[in-house]
Each structure stands twice: as structure tokens, then as C-alpha cells.
Image: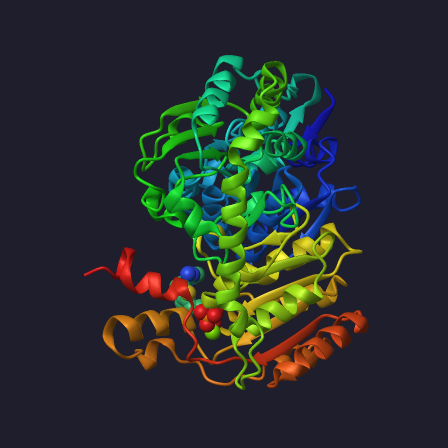
Length: 564
Ligand SMILES: Cc1ncc(C[n+]2csc(CCOP(=O)(O)OP(=O)(O)O)c2C)c(N)n1
Ligand SMILES: [Mg+2]
């Protein structure tokens, strides 16, 4: 009988799938798999914390629309990974987390790192798979990837007990399955119904989110918008699915972004929600005119109707649905009628967009010292090109300032933590972006608090030759929380929210990177230029005004968790 070990089967399954990277931190319970990946085309990318490995896998999934893969060891390796898993669940990112665990024979014997991993992670993922038989490893890997990618994508957990990995398996008994599932065709009746709604509307708005990006719908969306003349806002991983430069694109959908969003939402009579969720970003749906009709297209039936009654619910893959809509616009020959109908609305929003932006102009161009964080955000936005460069945001107020400012021309070029709101994503996201796009410039803009969590990923970047530029928006503390406390209670709780001045740039120099310290706004651009030209991992420590409060901090003080 010819045998093969479970670990070799697991490694081979990843090799067969041509997985480029497994983001990981080593441990005894996964060493058998490492052994068989060592000389393969699947690279083990090792981070300094399992949380970083998971955030890297999440970023990989977000950017490539394929499954990010992470592998961690039992017990503490597993628990350290959980935040990244939760983040991927919230961002609907396809991800497979492979974990080793104590052998089935040793459960409950007080063996090292024993814990009920599957029970802990079950509510956090789309599905858990614990493979207890070596012969079925391949089948389980197929199940895990298929589940992560199908329908609404998300994280999946795949566990291999160490004795299953180590046991010899009869080669002839190994089961192989490999299926890729395509989306169902769209329902033309639903597409017709949407066009009918549009023909009755005057002030429609279209919001396209992660679903538009994940379903590869950029071309169909562009045709849809151009042939109907409706204004588009983009959200989360949908940022850039149509360029912010496009005359019908009014940039980011989040209402606190300076521009036409707020005006559009309160006056709209038809909201067309394409592959995004009616979340806090839209005050749980309350930001839209209460009389507006809502059409919502989503791959996931249970998503439709959250927070608002939906007049036209459509369960569909977006690419197919938009294609069907475009065909009907063409067949019915209503393109001109729709464009003429909405032209005054576009004109009105274009003016509102300009006026909205003008309100922030003073801050974007401020010469103040300490530096206004919006000036910093604007300098970065101007410096980084919209098409191929990648900007990553992390931090509380810092993410808000970047979200209010960054313009994108191409999808998959802007990353932040989205609605899960986990600080600490910055360095791992930036490293993943640089790994994927070695020839593009990658700039992380992060809060001084946030940069601390996974600070050792600077070392990972240096060791792996990923020359990212990290700009720290240094307001001496946990700004967003300080500000919301000040609004809420009249003062910030110093013991909980003040950090003080830390020479982060010198810390990065000490491990082989390059550091810059900036206090004057006119020095931001030269520092960025020198940093990128150095081709080194750089930390640009920028002292920003700790008293400037972002609109998100104001909201945090007044809604949600802080509400009395
Ligand atoms: C992992 C995690 N811990 C705590 C929080 C709560 N929180 C939200 S914003 C914030 C302050 C962030 O400070 P910093 O990174 O310096 O950014 P700033 O707000 O100062 O720009 C904190 C602690 C969070 N969102 N995520
Ligand atoms: Mg801060």
C-alpha cells in the first residue's frame, strides 16, 4: 500500500490551487504542513503576530477578489488570529483560516495548547470544518474554499488535528473533489421593474459597494450609469469601481465626506443600493429621504431589507443584474429619456458637490502648526496618484480624515477597516498591498495609537523588502476617543487616552528603516518625495493638531455606544 501523510495532502491541496501566499506564524501543530510547502510555489509569508497574518490575508482577499489564506498554530496562535477573522466576516472577504490543533487522541489530557477552537470560532465565520480523516483532507480543502467564495463571501475555518496531519493515508483511498460555482443568470423581470421605477423617479441615487467589486461588475456599472445618467456614490471595496473623476461619480458614499452626498440623500426619491449594506454609514437608512423608494440588489437574500423597507428587492449577482438592466435600457430605447430626465438633478448635485468641498477647503490648505490633519490628508491625496498607487488608512480620526479626502481612480487601491472598525489593520494591509503590487507606491496613513498594535510589522516589511511609506498622524493619543469624551463629558480621561510624544520614526530607523519628523505643513511633500525615492521602509512622523475634531468623533459622541 502506497501512503502519503495528511500534512502532505493538505500542502498539495494548496499547491494545486496555486495559492501564492499563506500568511502565517509558525508553531508545532502546523509544522508538518510547512514541511511540504517549504520547497513549493506556495510561499509562507511569516508575520510577527497572528493578527497581522489574518489582516494580511483579509487585505489579499479584498484586493484580489480571491481567497486570502492564513495558517496558525493551536491555542494562542488561534486566539491571536480571531480579530482578523471577525474583520473579514464584517467586510465579507473570502478567507480560509487553517489551524492546527491538539491531536484527537490527546484531547482533554492537558496537552499543550488544547482548547475548543471550533466552538469559539463557529459564530464568527461562514462555516467551520474540522477534518478528522486524512483521506478526506482534499475534500475538506475544496469545501472550505468553495464556502468562502460562494454567495456572499466570507471567512471559513478549517482545522486539522495534528494526528490527522501526521497519520499515513492510503493513497488509493484519498477522495478528490474540486468544483467552481458560477452565479445564476439574472431575472430580467426584476431588471425591467427597476427601469420602470427609474422612469418614474426624478432624483435617484445609486450606491455601489463591495458587491460591485466582488462580482467584477465595473464595466456593467459604467454602462449602467452612463446610459441612464444617474449619480453614483461608491462605498468600501466599491471605491473606484467607477473613477471619482467620472462626471456622474460623486466619490465616497459616506455622508460625512465633503461633497454632494448629504444633499443627495435628503432629497432623493429613489435609492438604488447595489451590493452594499444599509449600515451606520447611512444612519441605518434614516439619512435617506423617508419618502424615497428603495431598490436593493444583493447576492444575499437576508441582507435585503435591513433597516429600511425595500420596495424592489433583488437577489442577484450584480454583474449579471446590471447586464440585464443595460439590455433593457437598450431594448426599450430609454437611455435618452432617462438622461434628460436626470440632467437637472446631476447639475444640482454637481453644484452641491462643489459647495460641499469648498467648506473643507480652508482645512485642506491650512498652514497651521501643529498641522491640521486634513492638510496632511490632502498632501497625501495629491502626492499619491489615483490609478496605480495604493493608500491605506488606519486610526480613528485619521481614517476619517483620509476617508473624507482620498480620491480613487481604480478599484482595489484604497483600504481601510470598514465597519468592523478594528484599529491595527494598517501595517498588515499595507504590507499585503505592496506584496501584491511591488511596482506601485503604497502609503499607509495611520494614527499614532493604531500604529503601535502591530508595530513589529515594520520589521516584517524590512525583512521581506516591502518598501512601504508609513505616515503617522501624530496627535499624541487616542484622538477619536479623546474628542468624543470631550464632547460627551467636557474633558478627556487622560489616563485612558493620552499617549504623548513618541519618536516612532527613530524606532523604525533603529531596525533598518528610514525616519522623518515633520512639524511644518510645507515639509510634508518633500518628506514624502524623499521617502519614496529612498526605496526603503519609511516612517514619517507628522505632528498634527490634537484639538481638531473629526465629524466621526462628533457622531461617536452622540450616537451608538455613547448614547445615554
Ligand atoms: C482594536 C481597537 N481597539 C480600540 C478601538 C476604539 N478606538 C476607536 S478610535 C480610537 C483612537 C485611535 O487613535 P489613533 O490611532 O491615534 O487615531 P486618532 O483617532 O488619534 O487619529 C480607539 C481607541 C478600536 N476601534 N479598535
Ligand atoms: Mg492619535
